[in-house]
Image (cartoon, rainbow, N blue to C red; front, side, top):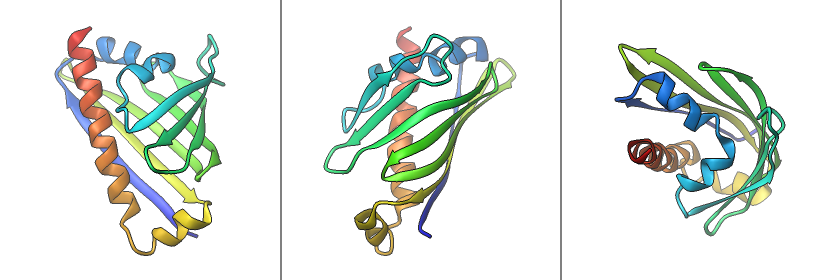
Length: 146
């Protein structure tokens, strides 16, 4: 079984009260995710749980995720259920002296045969982290503008 296991974090100079509304506004992700990962809201729910996103990385195959669980100001669990991967992702948000540590962790099984084959050659977990560092940087700039 080939996997992507990664954990990427950013320390934001904002209190958790300013970061949480951005992270929990799933429908606004399209405003701060990089264009190289085309993000589409397939289904939005008012309670957030059940919201479905489809990501189509430039030059890659798509995958779908669904918000599976939410603990306000602490965690959002994302279920990867269609396309390239199966598994879980977690936004973890922590308060630290009026700053916020935001972490995104994934534990994904690669189910796409071609991507699975590529994973023997390329460090897919590191590539995931490189992309996620861009996402976290975009998030920080988005919060600055708000």
